[in-house]
Image 1: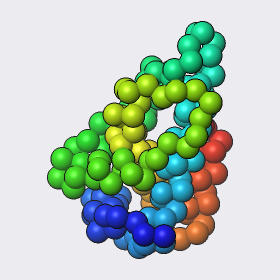
Image 2: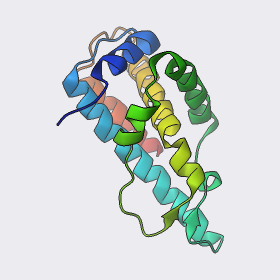
Image 3: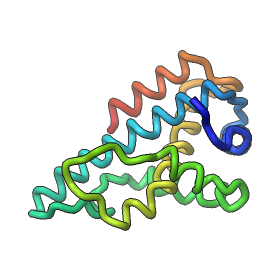
Length: 149
């Protein structure tokens, strides 16, 4: 799998979490982001249906205060690293039964970035000494997110 911007993601992990990552970690990150976004969209679809709409709006997404804070943190890193364009291609939308509003499409790179920052912080909480995330850290952080999302 060809992943664009590996060097930029390496810088993001170093700056946000003092961690070194490699291509395999970026592949895992890609899978992690897409799964998390899909879960957020599933809940957004339920909310849109409950409100009688066939389009999911940004406000339908269950973005917690913590995730919003991580999105803001990502934006400060993105100004320096210019990851939004790369994340826009990584965070491709899966086929969904409802239409996705423009607001969500425009915000996907930032949402993906916020999820990335949340993942980095979570890895450091799980193992404050982690320098090079291994399968164990990835499994634990994935389990935490699956429990919460």
